[in-house]
Length: 112
Image 1 (cartoon, rainbow, N blue to C red):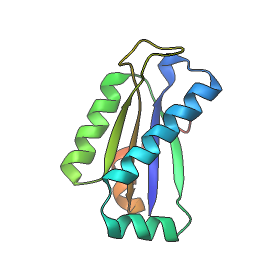
Image 2 (image 1 turned 135 degrees about the vertical axis):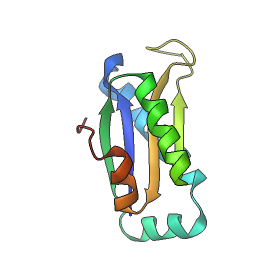
Image 3 (image 1 turned 45 degrees about the horizontal axis):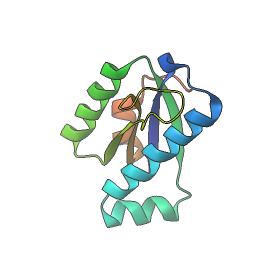
């Protein structure tokens, strides 16, 4: 079991901003997961990987693939209080789900 969080590299977010967006995405996707997947992932160390995307369109394409595969996922839109305009799409989390299922969608992305 694992979770992949995909953050936009094209926004050049500061380190703290990036960390916050990744955390928002992770928690939101876990809330979308069914109880069995959530418990299995939590019991196995909550494995996560942070990957990079080059834009909003790529995040929505990945989210669509996750939706079609039936995987828990969450898109994050920034509130706009600091570095970004309100509503800016910053990150996507996919999973927790089987490593194989997550890798089918995110396996070609680079580490952040």
